[in-house]
Image (cartoon, rainbow, N blue to C red; front, side, top):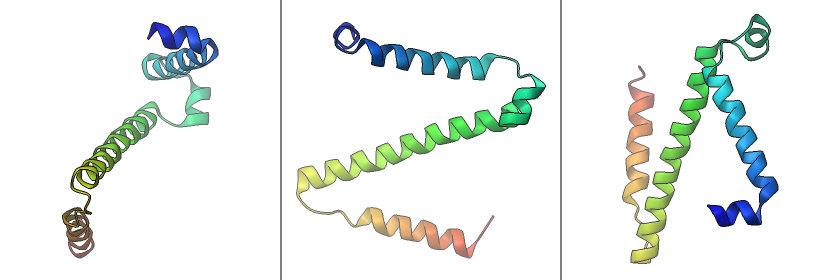
Length: 95
């Protein structure tokens, strides 16, 4: 970590500022002006955490594909069939 700070001081400052803004948005009380601009806090937090969760899920699927293809040198088609089964069941039996 110390090497990154020494090699990229501007990026370190930018990352720290973005993290500080997100933490402030999560823990601060929202004024009426902020509610008008960004909506209710609960909706905002649901969107942020939902996006992080979806990104983590995409990462897990992509790393699984990479491991399977990298080790076996073959495409595993079982993943695609499971996605197809989930999509068909979602269309056939909507909640």
